[in-house]
Structure formats: structure tokens, C-alpha cells
Amino acid sequence: MAKVEGDVFELLEAAALWEVAVAWNQFMDTGNWNSSVLAQPPGAVAAPDRKVAFVKLPRDYDATLLFTETARKNIAAHESALKLRQMELGLSSPDIVGVRLGSPLPANAAVFCSSLPNLDTPNRELLETAYKRIEGTLSGREFLFAIAVKRTTRSDRLYQPLFEANVLKYLIQDVLRGAAFRFHVHVGSFEGADVEGHYRAASLFSLLRGGEPTLAVDKLVESKAPIQVAQAVLDDLPLFPL
Image 1 (cartoon, rainbow, N blue to C red):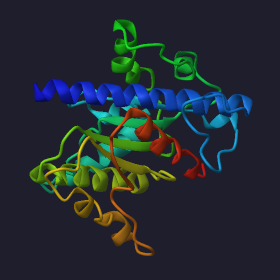
Image 2: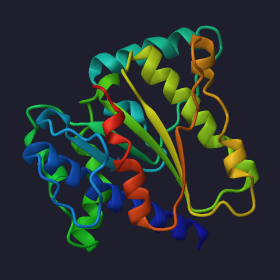
Image 3: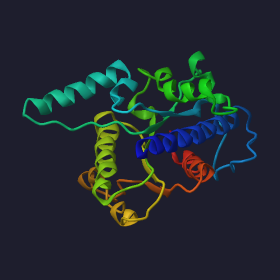
Image 4: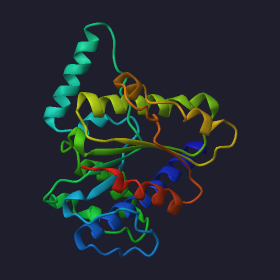
């Protein structure tokens, strides 16, 4: 029962973030904010080349499949160098990723500009399989967000998203030379653990790089309603300079 509840929670969030991408992408094309539910994020500037998608990834998915062949080879070379020393980075897959779409917009990515009218079977299947439309297309620069979605969080599981955040920030920003990358944790309830305290941890990559330290988890959201989560992610989109 708990697993099913978690899966439904994640699906509802994926649907809400799909509508974020639709509202944003339509604004990028027209310069007019058409959503009556989501507020236009402060600082948003219409630019047709800055369309995005949010896609749900399957459980235990190999997220490196989202990257171009060149990027995958760079990751493989990095992993091979570690394995020669009997080590590994320990890659894991986030629940949802946010990406920059190619320009001109590929034909199979046009769906990210159209709202889902409901969550009937065809639309649920679209949410579950949309990741296939972006496989093999991403460089580090196009990988904008990773989002860990947890319905509840036990104290012993709080470190999993922190580990994912540190590994992905190193991978995207150093190995793949990505321009920017943000990691969100969305939790259905903070009850029963010091969630906010744990996620004040600094990014290890930022500490090693020097300069101003940054958080490993850029934004922590207690998910009370899909609209709240959607707006929290939408408000971050203007922060990406590229």
C-alpha cells in the first residue's frame, strides 16, 4: 500500500510539472502568460530557444541514457578510471528531471507544449514514457533539474537525496561541464524527522571547488498540493542564465 501511495504521489507531481513546462513553453513562444493557475515567475523573459520539459524516470533507470553519445563516453571514461582503482562513483537515477529542449524543437518534443486534459490511461502512459523522447539528446548544459520525490521521509532515508545531489552536481558541473544545475527535494510531509536540518548540508563539490559554498539541495519543498510544487519549480526557471 505504501509503495502504491508513493507511486501515485510521484505521478501527480509529474503531471503538475508537465503543466509547468506547457505554461513556460507557450510563454517562450508568444510572450503572453496564459496560465490561469500558475503565476508568471518574476524575471521570466520570453525566448523561443529556452523551452523545457519535465519527465518522470522509471525506477532503477540508467539516467546516463538521456545524454548524447559524446557525453556518455565522457561518463564511461570517468567511471572506467575509477574502476581501475577498484572504485566507483555510484550513479543513481532521480525521480524527475527537468531539461532544456533542443532548438528548433524536435517533432517528438512538441507534446511538451500541450496540456494534459486529465489523467486517463493514455495520458498516464505519456507521463510514464515521455523520457524516451529525450533519450540521447542531452549535454551537461541541457540538464537543468533533478528532483527527488518522497511521500514520507524516515530519518534513515534522508541521506539518499543528499548523496544523489552531490554525485549529480559533480557529474553535471565538472565531468560534463554543465553551466548550471539545481537539485530539489519534494517531500509529502516533514513529520517524524528533522528534514530541514538535514538539507542545510553544503554541496561537497562547491566546497572542493572553492569560492562561495552552495547547498547540495537547492530547494526543499513540503508538498502540500500539486500547485504549490509546480509554482516552486516554475519560479526557478528564470535563474538559468543559459
